[in-house]
Amino acid sequence: DSPSINRGRQLFEVNCAMCHGLDGTSESVVADKFEAYGAKRPASLVSDNIKNQPDGAVFWTITNGVGNMPAWQRLLTEEHRWTLVTYIRSLE
Image 1 (cartoon, one colour):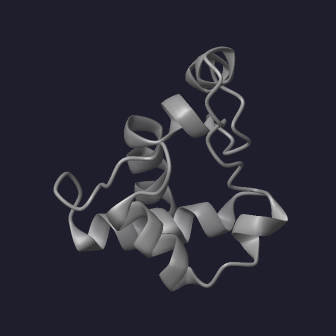
Image 2: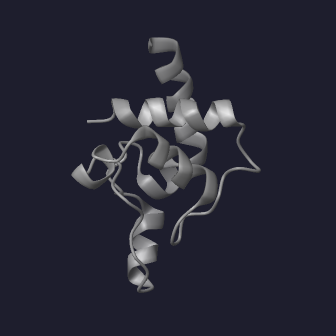
């Protein structure tokens, strides 16, 4: 619903956009730095790879981290992590 997406957007802007870009496309200064130093860019959250993953898989990745992405389990509540999944699903 809209309030959940709005809250997800706020959480995303504070916690995720620095790497994944404001629009989730992985276009950000931090992503450019990863690439410049030979590391893999953060995932584009609007890619088919992410869109085809079940919600639980996206939640698991946010919770536990993968590759260069840190785990957010200690920093965000379970509710906040699910709210981020809802927001990520709204990205186009």
